[in-house]
Amino acid sequence: MAVSIQAVRGMNDLLPSDTACWQQAEQVLRETVASFGYSEVRMPLLEKTNLFSRAIGEVTDVVEKEMYTFEDRSGESLSLRPEGTAGCVRACLEHNLIYNQEQRLWYMGPMFRHERPQKGRYRQFHQLGVEVFGLNGPDIDAEIILLSKTLWDKFGISDNLKLQLNTLGSSEERMAYRQKLVEYLEAHFADLDEDSKRRTHTNPLRVLDSKDPKTGEILLNAPKLADCLGAESRAHFDKLRDILESCGVNYELNSRLVRGLDYYNLTVFEWVTDALGAQGTVCGGGRYDGLVAELGGTPTPAVGFGLGMERLILLLTTLDKLKERNAVDIYVVGACADAQKEQAKLSLRLRSDLPHARIMNHCGGGSFKKQFRRADKLQAKAAVILGESELKDGTLTVKDLRAGDSGAQQTLPYAEAVALLQRLLAA
Ligand code: ATP
Ligand code: MG
Image (cartoon, rainbow, N blue to C red; front, side, top):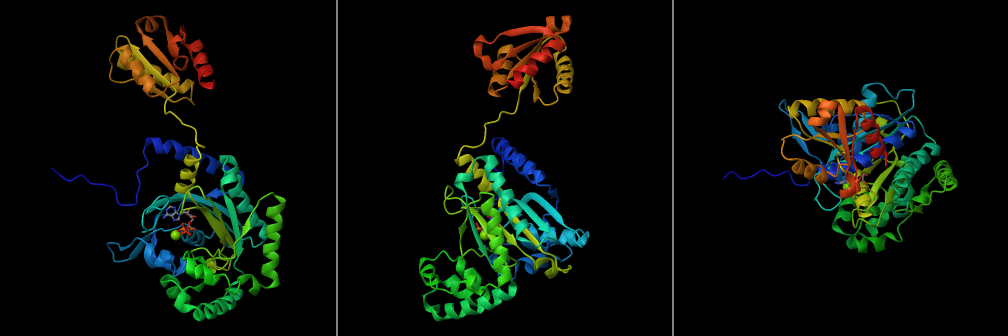
C-alpha cells in the first residue's frame, strides 16, 4: 500500500470549521483598516533573498536561521517571505509610491519561518501588516496603535491585551548606547547564557530580549537606553504617550522591548496577552525610518505593525468571542417530476431574489425524510419544498426549521414565499 503523504511540518490546513472563524476575523480586520482610510497592497510570497538580508539584518534570528531559501532553476537565490515589510517597501520603491507622498497601506497573507512548531508558532503563519510612509511625527505612531486598539475593542478582547511601549532613539543614540551596553555585558560575560554571549558582539540590543533568568538578573543593572536619548527623541516619545493617554489607551513602559528585526528606531510596541502561554505577542511594530534608504530609496520616515492572525484567532476562540456560523440558510428539497431540472431552476431564482442568503439545493434525490435530515445537519434556517402540487400551482412550501417539529409549514405564491423567507432569515 502506498504511504500517504502528509502536510509539511508546521504548515496547517484550515478546514471548513476553521475558515468560518477566519472569515469572521478577517472581515473585522478589513473593515477596521478601511475605516482608518488605509489601502490594500498584495506582494508576491517569494522575493530575492538579499532583499531580506538587507532589510531585516544579516545577524537577526529570522535571516540567520528561519528563512526558507533556495535556488530557483536559473540559479538565483530566492526566499519565501518571513515578514511583509521588506517586500512592501520594495514594491513601493519599484512603483514609485512613496517619493514625495504619503501612503497608508495594509496587507494580509501567509509568512514563512523555519521555527520549532508549537502552539501559536508555525512555519507558515499569517499576518495582517500595516505600513505608513512619509510621516515622521508621533501622531502617526499613535494612529497605528489606536488602529490596533480599535481591533481589540471590536473583538471584545481589550481586557486581555496589554500594550508595551519603548523607544529605541535615533540610530546615533542607539550606537552610543550599544557601546555602553557591550562594555557592561563584557564585564559580566562569563555569567551570560550562550545566545547572549554570541549576541554581545553581533547584535547586543537583542540580549535585552533574553528570556534566560540569570541574564535577566544581570540586565537589571545594565545601562538604560532611555539615558542616552536626546531631546528630540524624548519629545517624540512624550508626545506619543500624551496622545495615547488622551485616547484612554493604557500601556506599560518596557525598556527591554527591542523587537527581533534590525530596522526599528524610536517607537517600538507590542500587544501581549497572558491567555496563550509562551506565544503571547499578538501584534508588534514600530518606526523604521532608515529602511527605505537602506533599500535604495530617498530617506522616508515609516512606521508599521504585524499582527499574527493565528495568535489572534487562538485568543478569540480561547475567549469564545467568535460566533458559531453554519454554512447554509435555506435548503431546497423536492419531489416532483423532473426534480433535478426544476430544483436547479428554482434555486437560481431564489438566489437572485435573496442575494444575501446562502441557498443549497439538495442533490442526489431520496426520500423527504432523508432530504430534511441533510437540512438539519447543515443547520439550515429554512427549507423550501418543491413538490408536484407546488409545481402545478406555481407555489412554494416554506418550513421554518428552527421552530422544531411544531414549526408551521406554509404553502404560498412565489412572491409571498420569498417575503416569508426574508423574515425567517432576519429573525
Ligand atoms: P516572536 O517573538 O513570537 O517570535 P517576532 O518578534 O518574531 O515574534 P514579528 O516578526 O514581529 O514577530 O511578527 C509579528 C507577529 O507575527 C508576532 O507578534 C506574532 O504574533 C506573529 N508571528 C511571528 N512569528 C510567528 C510564527 N512562527 N507563527 C505564528 N505567528 C507568528
Ligand atoms: Mg520570532
